[in-house]
Length: 188
Image (cartoon, rainbow, N blue to C red):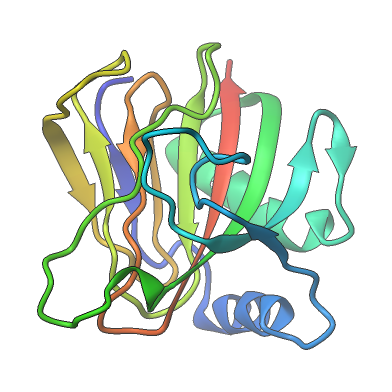
């Protein structure tokens, strides 16, 4: 799959609100990351602190798996696709701390791929925010990346693309937070 699939308003506004309420509840567990892209700081790479919550990883379901998993099933049904294997589900929480001055231009985070094996990346945006996801033409690590597409985050939007393409999140600037779920999966 080389194209980027986008479905706006995949789920009802009431379900969107419910999901946002779950992840912004005082009892929801967020885990600090030194960098939004990598689990550990990598030398010569800029770092952007963020928070995450693993909903599914290496066959293990997190506490809120059943709350968020139906979003992927809805997307697959909408696209008439069949799930082969779920690799990971991760909630990401970016803050607008990347910009010390509001007039600075947007700067995307570290380009990366999520897995070496063939897979798809699905993104579901949960709140009104800014900070595009940038998909690049490159399928290997590069000194320079060329933008293939920008995905504007919109509440209730699900976007999917081939996971072989390097991609990067962008921290919000005009809003304080950016919540998104990343689904890594394969289809039959």
